[in-house]
Length: 201
Ligand code: GRF
Picture 1: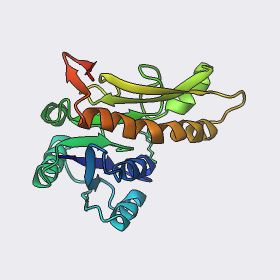
Picture 2: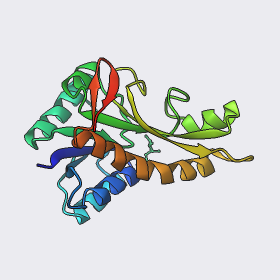
Picture 3: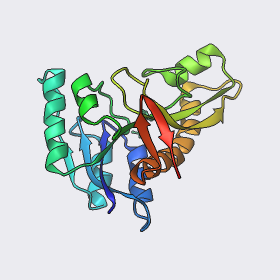
Picture 4: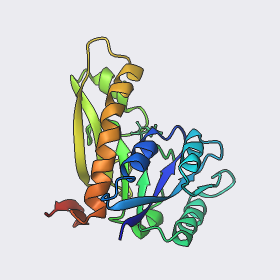
């Protein structure tokens, strides 16, 4: 049985698109069963709808953080979701929500973690002068961008790079990496154990 997976977005949704495309393969172990957005006008919602994927949008405005996360959790349970992929979901998720989905929730971050956590990864990588950056898919932990690392891809930082140019180069790798990570989780080849990603054949 394919794992029922929700993708949580806030905007463009290009990683969501790569997950939807990958999950079309008959032997892919997850299906994208729901796309959820906290921004009702998120660009990614239309793509999901065009691909026949149920979507839900609920604005976080007017909610306390934990109350919003409870509402999101209820939406996920209602849709019988088993796995969650945060994909450009611009909300810090609360500790109780993380606990409920521990080992079942992934995030993608556009740097080689643990370097350059937070919302300005490309700016920070360029400012630090690193020559290699990249992207990371990790299990979500209560501390932002700090969960157990599952897979990473490296990307060169070119001389004179702008954050936007680096973002484009990293995004190409993100679109390969996220489907790979979800495949590992959905097929049981990686699991979270003692705060670490444990791999098996
Ligand atoms: C990606 O770079 C992702 O790593 C980061 O936010 C961006 C989202 O882009 N968390 P998209 O919405 O998937 O196109």
